Image (tube, rainbow, N blue to C red; front, side, top):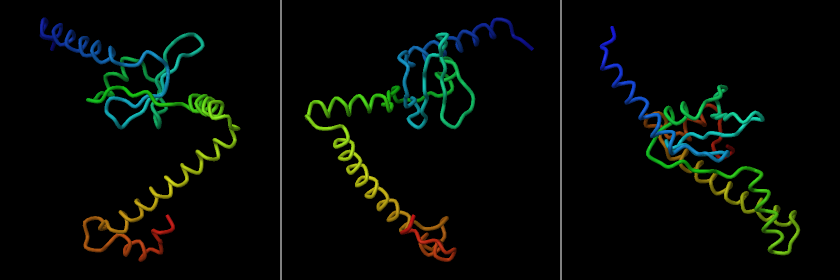
Length: 153
């Protein structure tokens, strides 16, 4: 049952929260890490100028208000680079260094491959050391019981 004035106060509190949350939301379309620090959103404008906010893994389209309220946290919004930004930067660097784009891309791919291999080694090391489900059997031993070689992952 409505309590008259109390409802109006709560409505204003909610409106103020929406205003504060949306004030810090991005206005420039792009891909962003959200304030929770764990989620991402792709903000873009459609051909009719309306905003669309897509969250990876979620088939729904959100509005500025729903994203800003539902996806909050202590971190600032962080704009991430898109493939278009990366292509522009690669072209700029290749021009600045006087090299062919293909050469620069090959160099960047080699660096990424080394970093990926190092990360894979670290993950495998941690997995081998971690105990399986709190039991006293190392994960590597448990994996071997099921025919899985963690070094091949």
